[in-house]
Length: 356
Image 1 (tube, helix red, strand yellow):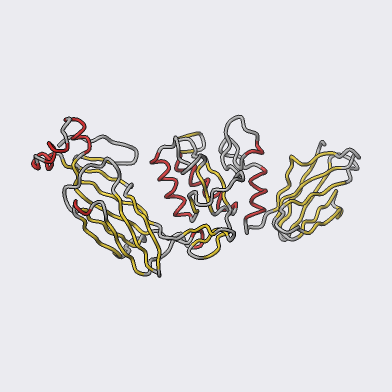
Image 2: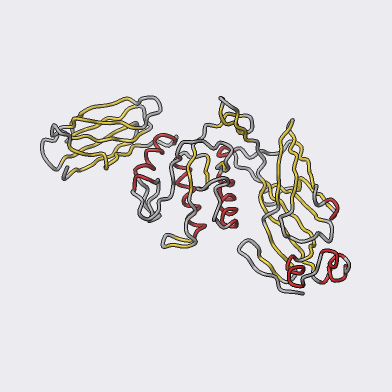
């Protein structure tokens, strides 16, 4: 039996491939999920019945669908699930487990021998000896997302208030960890930020020039964390970019190019989007005004922010609707160092300013 090539997406042994690229289209209608399965391109001809199963994802979960499709049915494989458990974003990122198995003529066979399709079909014995057993194991998230003109985005018929960022895949490995470790860390930070949707940077699907295996791995992590992905809501405005690149200023991304430092923009959007209490002084805004007094902007999602100067109450501000910026001007500077403190809700932070 021939030795097959190994790729990042496929763990291949003698006569066996493990894959995660079975195409699955879903449509919800009247509480039912209609599914269509599609084989990936260039996989070769199906030689036996393709078995597809859908399982509850949890360990020891039960079987919810079993189907077998002949080679003649391979171009039109469908399924129906009654009352499916819907993936519902951050509220309930539920995924099913899909398993499939079938025997295929190896793609490499026709390419290496130069056989025509007619010649290949004329020798079924050769098909068997050069066949490969293919197994799929992948996730399935069932949901419905729609963009309704002048109304907005709806997830499973509920209004979806979009909080979206543009994401750049991290390098395969760096001094801050492997690519998978970096992606998991990034998604944890984005969850704390209040993000609920992520678009890979680029045009169209956002994946041009990206390794498809890396993209699928990233989308899988997004599904499990509850982040919506895709381009159904392409809009002209510029999205905040999560990962900075060397040479970019700290103000252009939420995470600096070093992969470690969260920028002030991160805390601006956290105060704008997150339900987690936020109080963050934007130190880059601290400056001396022309009149000799000082100015400072503080990001917060609390109703009121209080500023103290050298231990004495200076001013409090109440939040404007949807605006996370509290701008304090004309702060007295009697001498340096200047001691500032801010309070908002149960949060507080103190600063010592040695120069302006």
